[in-house]
Length: 256
Image (cartoon, rainbow, N blue to C red):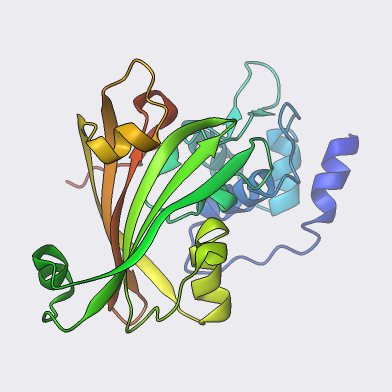
């Protein structure tokens, strides 16, 4: 099987961390290859038996990994046949447990994405920011507004505030490329986790003027506070999505 040998070349000696369950290690490995375009859409995966041989794990482990991949929208199981890789793009459910940039979500380049800076200025003394960051009115923040077009439609609008003690400089070029790439690669910051709240609400005037809402008068709004590895909050803001252009997915476990 040509695809299997190609798949196998990238995993000649897989090494799994003891901290990661076996099925999650297989899941992560296949998911990474799909996100990176190594496993292209509409291509069949190797059979369960071939995957067992490839990874050195049991059939139950492989099946659990494939089930999770299917649940998260990466593959589709076919009765009596091997699984097929789905078109993994920006409309595929985003995992609530992951922090990913649009560039990372669109790594296979299946969509035309354009980010345009709409505003960039410094604010100070805003009560909400002072409470979130636990600072006084002497601390200032960048306020950045960006609209994101996907395949020619402005379907996302983002407003972000960055603590200027941690992020002292941002310009148009950085804002329209990838702020997180700049923070991690240029400033050496370690971004750790984000606390999020998702609401469905009426669009405000700023969103109406920047987004192609069409027949919709509401948005899906995700507000988040994001922290560095040392526990410091460095960003607060929200992204508003046109309702038909976003889906979120989560895995829930029952504890008894």
